[in-house]
Each structure stands twice: as C-alpha cells, then as structure tokens.
Image (cartoon, rainbow, N blue to C red; front, side):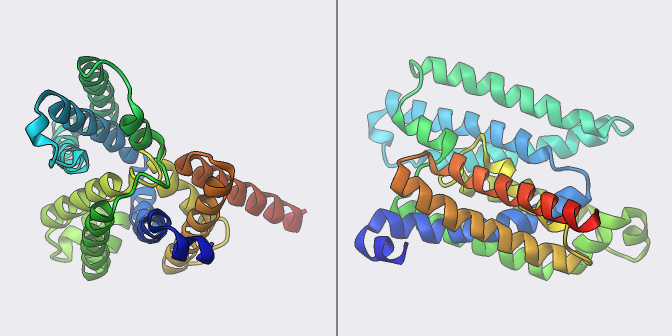
Length: 277
C-alpha cells in the first residue's frame, strides 16, 4: 500500500482523504447511534445526491461554470437538508422520526429529476454514487482535510455537551447547556461529514461507514469513549483494507470499504457468540 502511495498521486489523495473520512465518520456516527438518528445519514446522503446532480447539471448547461466543484453544491444541499430535518422534527413533535423519510424521499425524487435533466448517468456521477480511488483530486483532498478538521475540532470542543444531550437531553437542558445551539452545530457537522465522505465511500454507501464500525465497536466496548476509539480503529482498518483491495481488484472503493466493515462486524459477532457458548 505504501509503495502505491509513493508511486501514484491519486493513491496519495485517496489514502489521506480516506484516513480523514475514517476518523470523522465513526466519531459522528457514535453520537448518531446513541441518539437513535442513524437513519439521518441516509436521508442526508440522498439529499446530497441531489446537490451533486445539480452541480453536474450546472456544469453541463453552463460550460463557463466548469470551475464549480459539484461537491460544494452537494455540501450546500446537505446543510439545507439537515436544517429541514430539524424543522420537521419540531413540526412533528410526537412523530419526529417522520422527518427522515420525508427528506430522504425528497432527496431521491429531486436527484432523479435533475439526473434526467442532464440526460442520465455519466462516469462522474457514478463515482459520486459509489466512490472511486481515482475520483479524489488534489483540490478535493484539501477540501476534505479542511472540513474534516473543522468537524474533528468542533466535536472535541463540544464533547461534554454532545455527550450530555445524547444520553439525557432534559438533564442537559437543566444543566445549562444551550441545547438548540449545540444540536444545530451537531446537525451541521453531520451534513459536512456526509458531504466530504462521498468521494471515497460514495453517496449511497456513506451511512454504512458511519454505522457499521460503531455497530462492531458496541459489541466490544465497555464505555462510551472506548466505543469511539474502537469505532475509529475499525473504520480506519476498513478504509485502508478497502482501498488496497479496490486498487488491486479494480473494484469500487466505496463498496469494498463497506464490505470490509461488514466482514469485521460478522467476525466480531461470531467470536463473541463462540466465547459466550
């Protein structure tokens, strides 16, 4: 793997972008799972798909806009989608889970319409959907690193508040935590994480990298912090293993990373079951 990194620039881009994604996806995923909002990743990934399709359509209709990276439009759509989810959760206060399928449905519908307006799929859109080791450009890498650091630092700074609100929102409110502000920041961090992960894992598979390492870690961890560290360890292992296999076997990187994550979960479950019996 290291030999490939030094030989090819696209592998350097894929590796460093993958390491950043493997760090922040499970970090955000742990809080989403504890809050029972893991399906939010699916909804935001589909609304991000609409943004990517809109960006590609703009590039196609207006050649002078080739400088506009579709990832930025996808990021914008993801942020707007996350804000809409929060608003819908307030509207349907007793049926808050309804907000996620609403945004998910709108994301799919809008994405399909925009894709049809661009006369169907092309290679660029396919790489956004399922991830590709050759799709990460150097400008994408710098964007992923910059946004990833923002997500990482913000999560570390707000760790105590996020921890309190994730387990007992009412206690957090009584303790003086600015619930609305923290929740608003967290939902933006989720949107940014999903938007920058799509180059490596793909829009349709990003929720897997957010949930599968956490599901594996939950089988072994004895504390919340241990769950975070193990989740990151499993995610980084899946990214490195998946990228290596994807390169040698010419597979889609996103699918390979997800299968690697699923394999680790299956092995963990089998080992735990064997120890228990």
